Length: 282
Image 1 (tube, rainbow, N blue to C red):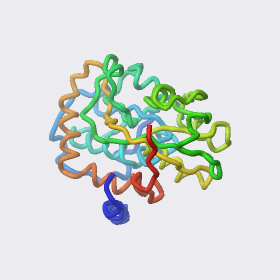
Image 2 (image 1 turned 45 degrees about the horizontal axis):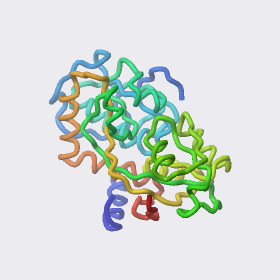
Image 3 (image 1 turned 90 degrees about the vertical axis):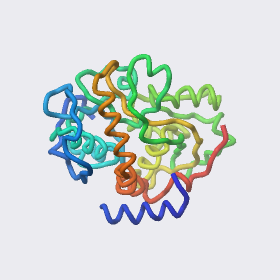
Image 4 (image 1 turned 60 degrees about the vertical axis):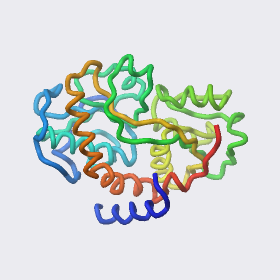
């Protein structure tokens, strides 16, 4: 993210713009604003006539809703909607899946998975990645009132989500001895709010969204900068990759993704920018 000037600009733009596993279809394009030319590109979708997207809920700011049926907006959702629009597909269909299954390439009959997924070499063996669309850092959250510091994190009990790069980062890089691995985001943050773990770590965007949505039960305590790039996942060998990659590149170049960032990310973080969070050293 940028400086405080950029932060305030994003807030201004935002004001102006403003967990089952079964398939669930959204109503058309939800509340998303469309950009670009409809049907400027074409693919053969996994299911004819619709854009099929795998997601991992909860994802505050990315897919705003408790279930696939209730998602109507969010950064990644509206990115998917704009991809579908430029592919000439009038329906976006979402399925909620575990993060672990997404990065292991276990899902079928989909066009892209969007879940703030870091690009890694081991994952490339079983899935294909889209062109990156975000960069991030790792955020640390704890129960409000808890005394969790950079100095004592290694001796704390830390929660991470299965299948994420945080598992190896916390164990191998930070040398945290007491690590709890959770199957999903919701249970991980519930453990933090209840004090079952001292802290939890995941992508900074997710941490800020969950903390802002916690009704004061959680707080952000720090962040670790990374060079991680976030990208979508395609089924291995997908013939649609070059076309969808080209659309994502267009969304970056024409300012659509910046517009979605302003509309959905900073507001979902309670107006707190990643720049406002203390940087911790690895």
